[in-house]
Amino acid sequence: MSKVTTIQVAGADVGMRLDRWFKQQFPDLSHARLQKLLRTGQVRVDGGRVKSGTRLEEGQEIRIPPLNIDVFSLPKSENEKAKPVISKADAKDIQGCVLHRDDDIIILNKPPGLAVQGGSRLARHLDGMLDALRFEMEEKPRLVHRLDKDTSGLLLLARHSLAARMLTQAFRGKEVRKIYWSVVVGVPTPEHGKIDLPLAKLSGAGGEKVVASAPEGKNALTLYHTADQAGSQAAWVVFEPLTGRTHQLRVHAQALGTPILGDGKYGRRGAFLDNKDIASRLHLHARALRFPHPAGHWMEMVAPLPDHIRRTFEVFGFDPKKEGDPFLASPWFEK
Image (cartoon, rainbow, N blue to C red; front, side, top):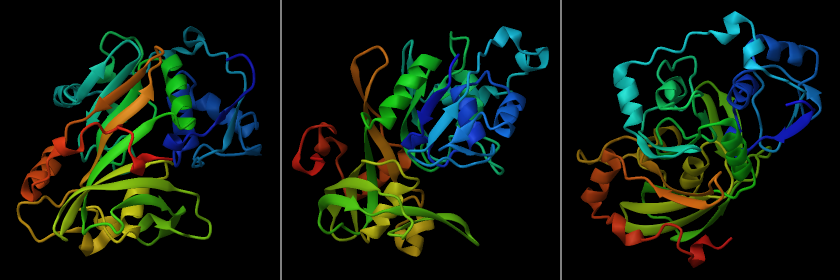
């Protein structure tokens, strides 16, 4: 990168720390150099000076100065950093999650309970396992979007920087379709439609939480369809988010009066059923993705359900084959 450029924050990067964003976009840029660029105001967000811990918001513009990174000219301490130690068990587990791999991308079926990125209380996370997904490539793959820790399903990785830029642009340009399957407590009324409720992050004694219809909220749109129901007790609901807000589907489901099964954070006690055959884990699964492949063609992928959701489907008699093609044009998906 030899000239000043501006990159707009994509929905998948909302809430990410600025320094982590740089690490993902420019893995060869050292932390020390980034700090200097921030101190001198060469890196800016929406024209203003920022710190490394600044949390990104959708639509913000990040000013990138000329970096002229040459990994062979970096100091030895930067060039020869030890790779993170990944246990054989973790390497085997994450490699077993691969649904598709080619020269440009890797698609995982992320298990529930695995965080995508680390935090102060998270020692085990996908970001720390990426070296196990290099396979024959010299550079490790890069995250281009995220899923909540307890959400399972499709996660797309770029295997090189060009693919990362193209996929990030596709997410930013809303070219990617994301279909989620869930089991909710109760049955939505109406059974299908569009949820248009702004969302905002609020901090409190219990930590950060997303709330709907807050005055300072940002627009959030979700399409939903009730695929099947078990009387009035529970329903299988398909969601398609049109925006990428943090916890969007979980908060929108709760706003409908039908919290996602197992989502105690937003549904509290109302998110659980008194049935020993049903797991108390979050029942939200990133089922399908449709996106422009960096090689120039469109690609679709569907992820099998995790064990706990599959068992719940069996308990309620939901048939996964009933939904058919997740991308089939139908009235409830009309924009």
